[in-house]
Amino acid sequence: MTMPDNPGDPENTDPEATSPEQAEAAAERAEEADLDPTLEADVDAALAEEVPAEPTVEDQLAERTEDLQRVSAEYANYRRRTERDRAQGVELAKSQVVVQLLPILDDLELAEQHGDLEGPLKSMRDKLLGVTESLKVQSFGEEGEPFDAERHEAVQDLSEGEEKVLGTVLRRGYQMGDRLLRTAMVIIADPS
Image (cartoon, rainbow, N blue to C red; front, side, top):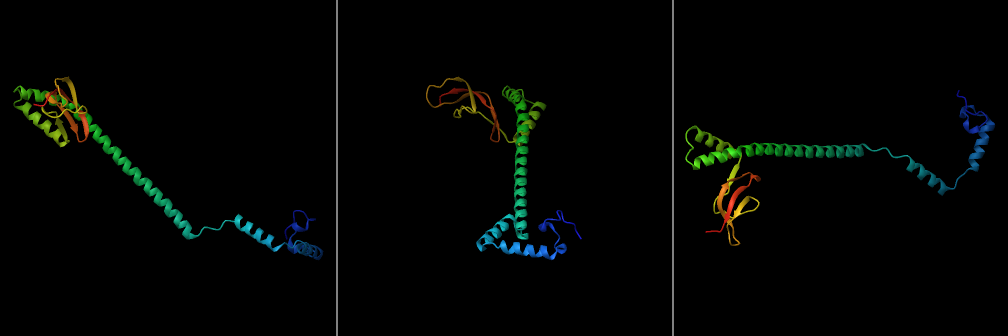
């Protein structure tokens, strides 16, 4: 048998330990407290709102599926971004190495123009050109090409008209794919 908190309070008593007088008093209070039916409906609705319904298994499954899809999409985006950044880093490193080799190509081209490119030096030039071609490095800046201020660096302008072409190429320009490695140094002339 449990002990009530306040033995004198009829609401805090154990139902089994109530006397017949207490039970009769409780019944009278219940009859006096008979509520209006609309008020009872409002109380029932308020109680129903306060107690949230248990989520169904289907609701839980749908929620977990959405979470999984969101995490999968985030991971796929992260992986693509990481691969793109890594590829850009590799291309940047290649281009930096090629830029450092360009003065060697310039010297070998000058040696060829003067007729000094023979034997092992010619073999080295051919191998170096093979490596740059495998990296998709292309030279530009031929005499007669139209002048493009973004790709050509003009050191002198001998042209008189509006149409400008490359007259003399002092140093070739190079690009690797779409990336400009070095502008061509040129003297601008009129088309012939």
